[in-house]
Length: 291
Image (cartoon, rainbow, N blue to C red; front, side):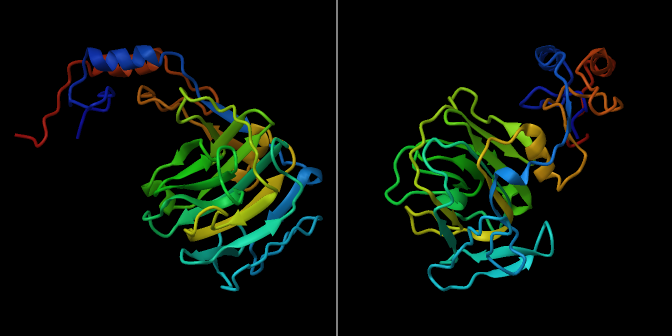
């Protein structure tokens, strides 16, 4: 095993100036403790709980339909008792006319897990789509050929990688008419910071689950507790959805230089405590396999 303080990649099993450079570069990075807030049902356009049905449990009755008559089934859910189970062959659901298209503000959210990672790139899991495709013609959670991404057509960014999508995770995307934001398990992400998240969307008022309107591939996996809001939800509201109503969501420091683990959530920093641990192990070398 490598030394704990060997944090510079590629790991070389020695604690030296490269590791000190990582700590210096991430100095004073901090965690966050989000106090969650329940989103208002006044802005809830549709909610699909998949409790043995395809119905919208909100007030607008935007019920999903089974266009091919394949009758998708149900399996154990992550929220409630059941989740939608899709076979990856032809199972999918649709609803046309929820009142959101183009640059209208919105948020979509869902839970999902894949049955396997052999999924063609662009396979829709949940969200808006358009017959014909093109840049800006989608707004959905989709496959990247295994991993899952935020996708709008001509723009996509990874949320979770191939192996991660085999487990239940919460996904969310919002759009204010200009900027796309996306979240994995309630935490806002930007996996390609060099690429702008400002896009002009042109998609139709058409929502699919399990298959886009532009390609024939279907999603093999489970989908649960999908929601559409007609506003941009705050990070506190998305955190509420991703934790099933827990009072807080802890966002840890995203750095290997976070070596000291005894600080209180919400008050964690990369600071002299981490430096002391690294300094104590400076020039420690562990050879593997051991001689």
